[in-house]
Length: 236
Image (cartoon, rainbow, N blue to C red; front, side):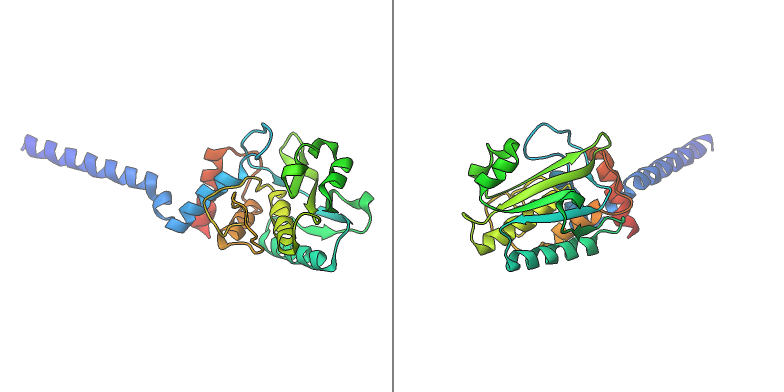
């Protein structure tokens, strides 16, 4: 009788232990394969930068981006930027917005269309990069990892019209805090190989949407980002 009771107790402990383990892995098991891919891609793209030695944490704008457009902008590029701006504004749900201003003194972000050499004259820190890059972006952030200003350029001399649209979308989107490239998805605007993609892939839209989600924090490391994204995706 005692042995039987002992066996039953042992079985109960095992069952409870298994249930506890299942609870611990439940959030991950509720994610689809695509959602797991989103989290992995977000961590590849959104933590840190391609250049420099900045820490690998999440960063984003906590204020509106007020864009001033300078250089030799064409109606085609202005229309393209308006499309990009509209798409991003619709994806962001944390209050973030992009607007265009006509006075550079009112802006906190400058888009320059023109030769790389002209851009380098205005921003000498970029002079060693313009020869090998037809588009570049640069952002400043404070001690809380919040962006507060930035600038970018698209070389309209060396790049053709399709390449210009691609560079405008890629560099501006990376200025949001999705600053790295990856070889993983060929159709992605963040593809590290040279492409002429002029539309966001579905996973690109999800990255923008999740970065500018009300629950996504700033200054989060890889582990923290993983937890936050898991919770967001499970609760959607």
